[in-house]
Image (cartoon, rainbow, N blue to C red; front, side, top):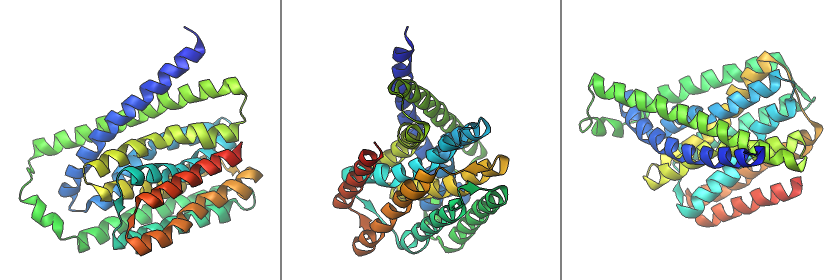
Amino acid sequence: MSETVLSWIQLISGLAILVVGGEFLVRASTKLAVYMKVSSIVIGLTIVSFGTSFPELVVSVDASLHGHPDIALGNVVGSNIANIALVLGLTALIFPIAVGRATLVKDWPIMLLVSALLILFGWDLTIERWEGVILFIGIIIYNVWIIRSSRKQNKEIEEVETNFKKGAADLARTLLLLLVSLGGLIWGADLLVDGAVGVARAFNIEERIIAITIIAFGTSAPELATSLIAVYRKEDGISLGNLIGSNIFNILGILGATSILNPIEVNAEIKSFDFIFMIGIPLALLPLMLFQSKVSRFAGFLLLISYFGYIFLLF
């Protein structure tokens, strides 16, 4: 069997595993939200987003430690662009997503603020260890804050609890399902990335382009599968929270941990081109969400156009 054929098999198998893993992740996360007495948007912002961002973490840490800074940073920047422009755009085009007030006034602005912080840290073309420490502390503070604030404000969970089994055995099954689904997402993303890179190398594409397009798409595939399944199951909070949380975790958690282990060199083209799209696309979408309180099909269409326009300009 040739290497090209094997790469295609890995790519297709990875996609299939991601779809199945996304379905089980949403099921387990919805149940866990009740146990933790927090809303589905918080579960989307924390557990689901962390789980679907694990592939980015593995790729970025491995790339940085092996001397591939363009892949380490390009993977995260490309994934954040893909999460909003491609994943949210495609999801909204199929199933328009309702946007809660908390998302508009807290979560989305925080995502923009975190993106701006990354641009600030990378402006001198290096993300230093001390900057990584600040980023990583930020993800800890953020998660403690959203979980505590949700427990104080959320009231609807109490009504759901009465109709939900809370035995230790059921909790154990839920946690097992969560772990298995997270493992499936990581495995599927690994297969997808390996296959995609194997196919791409035949075209002699530079590492930055591979990272921002193929690898970023591969590591964003869990978010795509999870978001589509969550919206189909009427869990808009998990869908949107997953994407926002993933983008925040990608910057604070992944780049924080990666730059602590090894300072990241920032490609000048990422600074002058990719950073603009990373913060510009969600910034442009904010007024539309404020006006309609949802991500409409029209907004989804515009997001997809912006993503494919960005990819076109890359090449």
